[in-house]
Length: 502
Image (cartoon, rainbow, N blue to C red; front, side, top):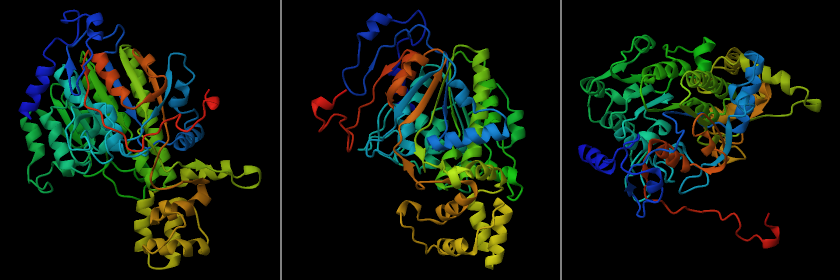
């Protein structure tokens, strides 16, 4: 790792920011790297570049999830999501982004975040590694060597695919123990979320006490909300507030699931921004990661509540930007998941609004409900579990259709819905009016909102890899990792007659 740092320092040997740079903007613009992996001398960033960047990711946010969360917000918060309020502002730029991976039109989170984090579309499952295993230089390595503070805040395990995509390089997104160690090796300044087990000597395969290693390196190790409130501002932070992912909000609030207290995404974001407030340059990734998990589970309530919590974190970032106008906010998602939608229900769709209000009656996430159903001994007991957890009493016929899936013997007409969670989600769709297309990711082009200095770079139709280039440009760095040839690349004009062009 020391050799890698020496390599990066050699690439960034020239001054990076400020009037003392060795090359003027006009000179640097003509000094484009001609070979893959090459870096050109640093240059003065474009006028008006942000000094602070906050990259917000609502992981797995399909357009239907966004719409349903907005409905929920209007009912229970008396206002629209801040996301939609931003769309009314003249200073907010809007784009649509293609997030495909190197090997598929449908991306996973590791390939999607890595496209932002290294400027290359890579195969699903990898983190900042090319298809041939070649390591790629990451955004956080480059910005770290340039003097920027770097932070990761998430409701998932901190080693999960999306945060890892900005800072780590491993052959598999499942190499969580390696990712946890790489954050230390690369001196990421602030990491907050779950995943404590990957830092524990009694769990790690190498038996390394990673928490002790972080402390020895000068980090404050935070494990409770109180630790976060009292965290020192003269140290780097590693905050690991749960063994795995932070609990779903529907479980935290429902009163039926025993969960340890954890900080909210808004609280972690507030703490992170206070920690970085006096830093001259920083970049912070904020991820509402469990939006995706709820959608994978076909759990409408879980996904909606997590997205509303993401919106609360967005409010924190907007307030920070108001106080620090040199801050750029970029808000997006890495892909859609499950493509849920509130459907037309009843005559003239008259029951849709009524059924949607039942989302608020959900007291447990679907995995927790499944666990309790499987422990129940009789059909009557199973119905009682569903009633207590959701406020819904399905008919015996529906329970009979669900039972084979609970026994792992069910068979759906569409394989993408062939699971106990999907089956329960379909049953509850009759209660909340929401159904899903599958338990998997989708190929949707995703929305991007940007506000603040540099926001004009985020409009129209963009490729996910462009964000890497923009962030480096704002820091006065030109660097290009070797690009990958795409599998099943689509030529937009292939086979279309010239007379049909527009």
